[in-house]
Length: 253
Figure 1: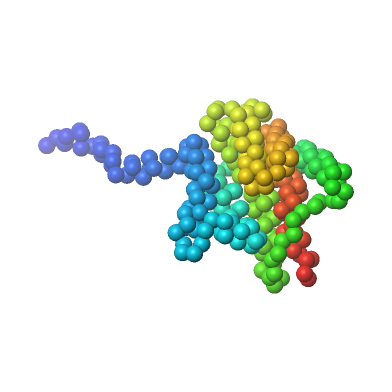
Figure 2 (figure 1 turned 90 degrees about the horizontal axis):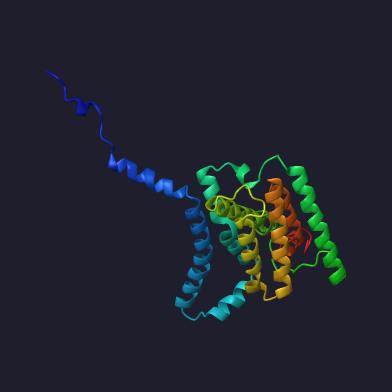
């Protein structure tokens, strides 16, 4: 008896296709960028909402407590400025070369970043009469815990912060099909937008414009050389908050 030829071909399993479709969404640059940015906005709003519903606590009191506890701020920095992008890279097993973490362009990128660092340090010295002025942190821990905060603070305020910008630049350039352009939409939008956001945290227009110019310079080096290692190290050397954490190594010893 002849078999029906239709039985020789299995029909696609609609249930099996649904997880694949869901995973495909995660590969879209627009989804990744939107999720990371919305997460960076939603986390502070969620914390504010929790503060409001807690009995006997208000926003001004919580804000004062937050800025008086340096050990808490570094966790906030890590979560808001970089954690989500880092998780996308890890779980999707992204090729790090697309984010500039590679050998090509390492020397030229590092030299250009170092030049920017020297220019910034010189300007700071001429303006303030001292090298590397930075805030003083009040964190009283034993050496093992203190070393953790030094490493965690340096990573969060230095390497991870600029990697977050590079990651977003890459995503915007993928969306706009401009990855090969040096002066790309991603470079301009992300550098300027996140630089100007410092006015909300510092209230200092001069500092905000300086950070914006540095972001633009370091990210331009990444776009020009294709390497982000030098710019990430450069931002680590420039960010005064990093030096505040490094000072913990000998402070109170």
